[in-house]
Length: 181
Image 1 (cartoon, rainbow, N blue to C red):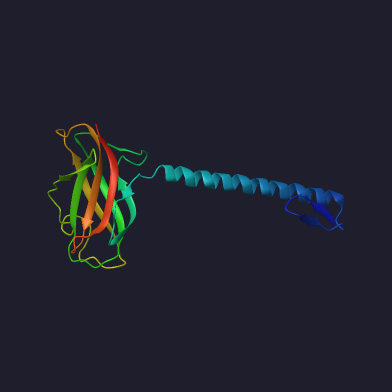
Image 2 (cartoon, rainbow, N blue to C red):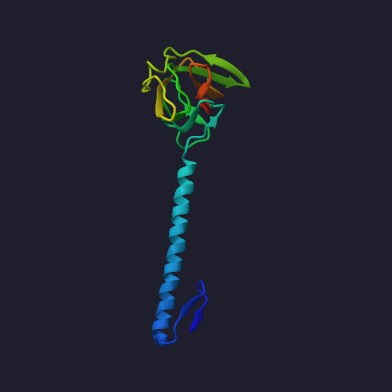
C-alpha cells in the first residue's frame, strides 16, 4: 500500500502508478474545491449578518423577538431617518403568554433620559396586522408606519419601542439607535 499525505489516504499497490497519481491529484482537487466552497459559504454568512439591523432587546418578558426591520436601515449601525419621510417598522415575535389586548409604547432616549413619544394608534390589536387575543406559542408580526416630521429636530437618540400585554409586561421591547437628519 502507498500512503499519501492527504488525510491518511491509502491506495492499494495493485493499481498501476499512473492510476495512483491520478487518484491523488483528483483527491487534492476535491480537497481544494471543498476548502474554496467552505470559504464562499462562510463569506456569505458573515456578509449577510453584517446587513442586519442593529437592535437591542431591552427587556422582552412575555415574548421572544424573531426579527426586526425598518425600511432603509438594513446596512448601518445607526438608523438614519430623514425628516419629511415615512418608514415601515416591523417586528416578528413569538408570544410566550395569552393576552386579550396589546398596547404600543414608544420612548425616545436622549442623553440617557427616556422621553415618552405619543402615538395616535397605541392599540396594537386595532392598528396593526395582529389579531387579538394573543396565544402562547404563536408567531405574530407587528407593523407600524413611522412618519418623521419636518418639525423634528436633528439629533441622535435611541428609540425604545414596547408592546405591552394585559398585565403591562413587555411582550417585546426593542431599542434601535437612530439619527434624525
